[in-house]
Length: 410
Image 1: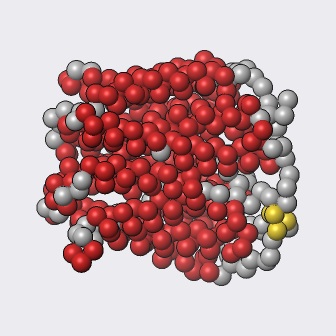
Image 2 (image 1 turned 180 degrees about the vertical axis):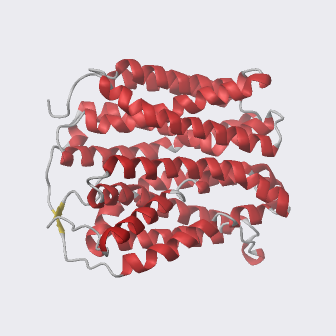
Image 3 (image 1 turned 120 degrees about the horizontal axis):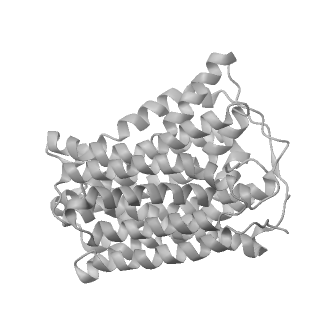
């Protein structure tokens, strides 16, 4: 788990709450924040053909809108510890939720004077990506700091909430569109849960006192470690596939002739299987002396599942996307588990995690970019299927190397 405050001196104090009920209230707020961190990706993909047709989006705009939010996860992640030292993690998290809500409200607006829907889509999507980047880094640290005796429970709840947000965004966006007849209403719908969490978290965050902190250097320099780079490249390759699932699996299914509602259900089911994989894979990986076998298997499952979703017989599409879901959830989980298994102390683990997020999300966004560009150039997703066979194979290679029983620093 990332701890954005690991280098603060003095150490950050726990969030001030009024007894056990206040702690439960804080826990509910943190889980609900996690519930809003992936709807941005899956909701847009669920109604992408309708948006493209109605708003007249050019091909380059579709590529940008699916790539930018993932890129910003890497760009803004390093700013989270800096802002947390200056304003306090709770207030930065509150500000991020305000920006996320504003971005979700802005995204579907039509601005005739500025050129229609595209400017608002770009600005709103960018705002959402920046806000989610801050939440990605700050949430685990707050969970670790404020719930040290319930770390397994709270960690499981908030990570499950993140997966559930992707599944619900994929599964419920198209039905909202079908009921309202407007893709704008389908996207605006997801501003509602974000606004609710913003209101709930507001009184808790604003009353926190935050003394002045400074950063101290501690731990090994992970940027000079070959093991750290092997783990990070493993993370990059899994991120290339993971966010491409959120951005492109629904359009892939719809291009193959699956109707919008069914495509949303298939993607949701695949993400639910991701949740199952993410629950069991870390414990299984930790049981082994090294993780070479499990890293290799789940990487090949993911790349193969993605390719079969494009090339495999359509009557078995639930099988292919199920294989993809189990593989992807397990792959993401074991990549993150490498943080703890390849380090000896909390400071080094936090620095490795920051390296993995910055490089992993930043470079990993090229997956969605390449899928979009290949589709635009060829007019089909066939080339993307070949791409992810290659990416899956590379992930297996680097997963094998990252899975060896070694530690950063020897």
